[in-house]
Amino acid sequence: MSSPFDVLEQFKNTSPLEDPYVGPVTDPYSGLVFYELSHEWGTGVPSYPGDADVIFDHGVKHAQFGVQAFKVRTNFHTGTHMIAPIHMKARTEDLETLDPARYFGNGIILDLRNKSNWDKITAEDLKNAGDIKEGDIVAINTGWHHKYSDSMEYFGEAPGLTLDAAEYLISKNPKFVAIDTPYIDCPCATNLTPHKGMPGPFMKRLVPIYEEKTGRNALEDYPGFYPAAKALAAAGIPVVAQMSGDVDEITGKRATMIATPWKIHRGDACPVRFVAMFDPSGEVRIDKGI
Image (cartoon, rainbow, N blue to C red; front, top):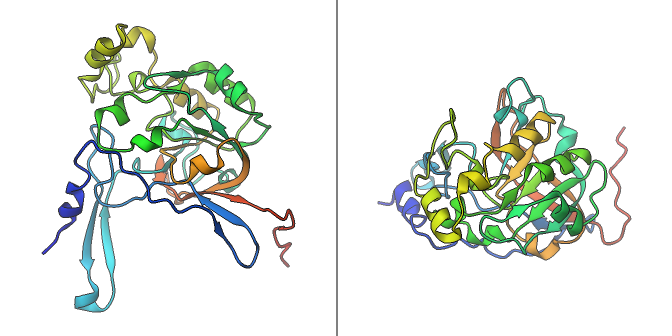
């Protein structure tokens, strides 16, 4: 008889886990066109170094009861997930207190697919990638979602935002910022590497590998501890990490986007279904209600 761990085993390799291509889906009533921007989520999806795996326990089954139900054990920082400011800064907003209007709005999908392993994404990079408008949702496609896997490269070698990039985004007052990497910072500026007085390192081999491959000192290149994430949190801006899906199809375009987490008291993170939508006719409006 199969168990949740049978599914888990398929993720225990370094091969990228490509999401099945869905492409645009058109609503026949409104004519709106929807694009998926999320990874699949379930048992054994790649989890951050130091975190436990997601486990789905198929406890209620069709054969036995005529219905199906799962029990889930998870860290909420898994798959495509939204991170509330409280994760990085005390006494800031959690998933319960964030304004729901932040989860929906217009924005831009920036093309940073020219970035590679450990590259820094600067304010100048963001400015050159597109025109971010005041109050936009800003989605950043580095192409890293194609490496999604339980691997050293995916978690340890991703590009990330510099502090000046975060400060530039803050100046635009975005509803939220999304990125297709595991962290919004470079992994060398996270708990994967040693930082004085901070937890970790959860990937002890990262610093030696960085120095072997680049000939540079990782902690001199990235001396801060989550500088971009902390700056965005202090400004009250949520972050969606591990964007994926069909993002390549709409990169460089403007779209309406939505990502809604659970309403969790003191919740610091939650998996989300992240979606972009377009109105080819320009005629769709929200009903005025009663």
